[in-house]
Amino acid sequence: MELVAFNLANGLIVGAFYVLMALGLSLIINLSNVVNFAHGNFLAIGGYLAFSLTPYIGFWGALLVSPLLTAVFGYFIEQVLIRHVYARNHIYSLLLTFGLGFILQDACRFIWGPSPLPLGIPDILSLPITEDLFFITWYRVFMVAVVIVAVSGLFAFLRYTRVGMRIRAGTLDLDTVSALGVNVAALRSYNFAVGSFLAGLAGVLAAGQIGLNPNMGDDLIMPSFIAIIVGGVGSLTGTLLGGLLIGVAAALTTVFYPAGAEAVIYVIMAIVLLIRPRGLLGEEGMLS
Amino acid sequence: MNENFLVRHRQLLIVWALLLTVPVWLPMLGGYTALAGRVVVFALAAMSFNMLLGFTGIMSFGHAAYFGLGAYGCGLFLKFVTASTLLGVLAGTLLGGIAGTLFGLLLVRRRGVYFAMVTIAFGQVCFYIAYKWDDFTGGYDGLRGFSRAPIDFGLFKLDLASSNNAFYYFVVAIFGLAVGLQALILKSPFGRTMLAIRENERRARFLGIPIEKHIWLAFSISCFFTALAGSLYALLNNFADPLGLNYIMSGNIVMITVMGGMRTFWGPLVGAVLFVALQDYVSSMTTNWMFFVGLTFVCVVLFFPRGLMGMLQKRAGT
Image (tube, rainbow over all chains, first blue to last red):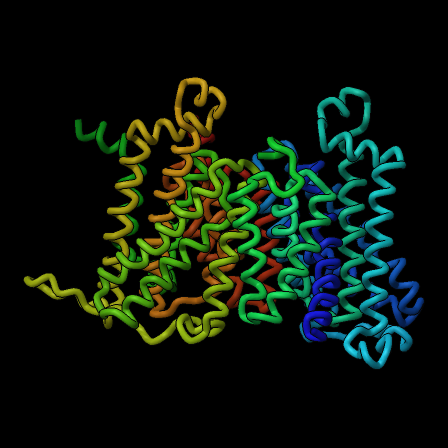
């Protein structure tokens, strides 16, 4: 029973990570039709920036500043590279971000070195919450709390701010939004920055748990794709659900059949595609 | 008549003249024949992929799966069943092709970015299987313990095991058969329908063409050819690598195609030459090869989206 509880808690934490990554990816796919292969590298950059900032502004400062810097970096990348391929065949945006991922990964390796680095977290967070629940440190609780705050913040942003409303409207019908006088190019840039912010935040959190290495994002990008497919392309709530679902499913599979932990998320995807091709909460016809 | 023939088929003649004389001129440039073998194998994979991307307008980003399954199918057959090169190639082709055909059933209703994402995810399934199933596939270290066997044609014996040139010509012969077949398919009514789907899917649908069936068939054909290339790759290295199944490999296949020119028949072959030369050169010069390869990808996308052959054709005004 304890084993199940442990893995369930673990699954929720892993799922929360997938959610942060996948929501950022999903935002960009919905508005710009770009699958950002380099999203995992934005995550790594967020983590490494936190590593470099921590000695000056501490962990808490880095947790705030590093995602913001990642967002600025994302905005810059969108302005310089990504926006040139919106009007072209989708294959170009895939290739562009694929190449960009290579560049960023090697850049991290060049700047911070190829060997893994630890990110120091405050002492209080590395303690277990109680002796019985020795396997859950405060850091894990803290991560889940941050993810909850970030996701609520994102949904509030999309619901109540002007830019957020435009992003949602643009997801549904970009032509009309453009015809109503909204600067769609700028909107896509902001949107990309928001997505990068989420990746950067996930990077800081991940770095505190598993440490840093140049390809730390690689293991997270595929589950994030699957979270989006399972949840349904076009629906952020679906992505949220999909991320948690595959996180928990993978963790529970570990209890009963450890070798199948990664396989199970693909099985879920195949089942969803067979029974409900548009995804759990996806709308028919969206991007398909 | 002869002059006309030469002009009309000059691309074909140039390609084959160069391919058949590789063992003569490549060493002069400082290359080795196995390098040319790699070019031909990648070219076959990319040309098979291009039947989808360039000629049907469908964007798969997971062709490494079928390439890698071809390699593993061939390797496993040679290792565990019987050491017959031709049967191994057949086994690899069937494994990758059938897997692609089955995956295709789940894919045909998706389009655009969604299609690409699902193909990537399927590709990763195969990667994880090869990676995790240690005792059967060799896991992380890849599959070893098989090697290409000589082929006995009765009258003469083709010594693939020890002679690199003999193996190169074996690969080129299969390449020739495969791309010849591809050209025939593209010229057939079915191939013309693929073009119609690429140009305007909705109009093709209104004309009564069963789009999903055609896309499924095109996907399946493309997977069989890609798996054939994969089997040859296993023979080339006497080794099947799990990284050959990874999405990085899929990206490389797409890149080869785009770099050479995705709207041209021979473009992927040109792309394979460029890609293998670049990879070989850069990885011998610096450990930061990923940076330069990535930079090349970005530059090709931003500045040379038509690829080399596409640019040449535009300049020639054809």
